[in-house]
Image 1 (tube, helix red, strand yellow):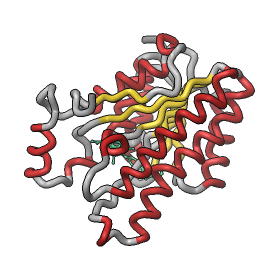
Image 2 (tube, protein in one colour):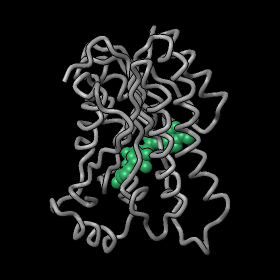
Image 3 (cartoon, protein in one colour):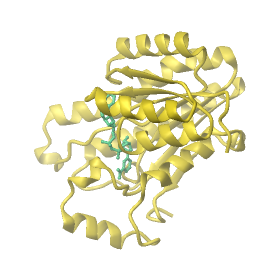
Image 4 (tube, protein in one colour):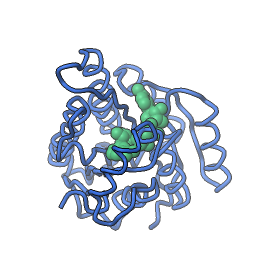
Length: 247
Ligand SMILES: NC(=O)c1ccc[n+]([C@@H]2O[C@H](COP(=O)([O-])OP(=O)(O)OC[C@H]3O[C@@H](n4cnc5c(N)ncnc54)[C@H](O)[C@@H]3O)[C@@H](O)[C@H]2O)c1
């Protein structure tokens, strides 16, 4: 699948699924805007790899939950790269706990980054996509946003919110050649899941018909498909990449 001539903005691209997507998209020919928060070293390492493939890379540290900062980031990215054709809303966090014990701050943090962050980035990029009459918006939801999960009411609400948001954006932007889709990963081996107890991982594994945990490449390849011209007639969909957990 070819992304030559395209520029992709990927949020939370310095680790995990976002990192693999940045490298996969670059390999397919795209220039990459690497949004991140945290250690610059990790983001620069991704940028070096992108450049080694002969693509352009722009590294921008911005908290996706900060509306003004996101607007400034997108303006800077559009100016430096010339255009933004693909947005991947990937940044996300967890603050797990049973509802009765969940702190308001844990609810607010997860909703701010996982859902408002998607609003901030999509709104800022959509302006440019509308003008150029082309765009691909891919947002990373979760199996938890579809099925729910004890201990993750905040995360599930945000991830379910992404699905409703995506379908609405798909309807608003379709006439301008813009598609909006969500990916609902199952259990993927990253920093996010490395903290889970062995017992939880074993229980998850037992619920996966394909009998293995997901790799970041599984999600990146699905995103590459949705970002490519091969998916130009697909919009408003939720692509489940979960080894068959949800059918
Ligand atoms: N790992 C899984 O099993 C799994 C399953 C379903 C969905 N997801 C989703 O996939 C996405 C990527 O997660 P991952 O598993 O690669 O974990 P990860 O922790 O490696 O990646 C999340 C990234 O988001 C970044 N981030 C956090 N807060 C941010 C902010 N305010 N602004 C900008 N960036 C921020 C982090 O720095 C990190 O690079 C998340 O949206 C997550 O909810 C993961």
